[in-house]
Length: 104
Image (tube, rainbow, N blue to C red; front, side, top):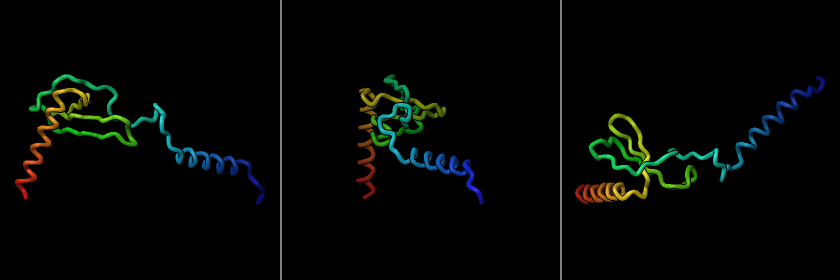
């Protein structure tokens, strides 16, 4: 079977893609996996909350992200430094501690 140059090209391309996927892309702004592009510090009434997600910094994103999903399915990214959200989080944490101690 004679040597086919396009087999070599396909093999080299495949190796290139595999190698490219293996390297970490730390510091690549376009590769950021942060879910929040913009954040808001505006107050959102707790009556409108459906779910609160707190994403700690990690490999996916270098900053803490707080995502509130409202009952109308809209999502809002909240600034973690906003005073009102800190109060909401501490109240939720204290409620969880009370609930855990009551279960024991």
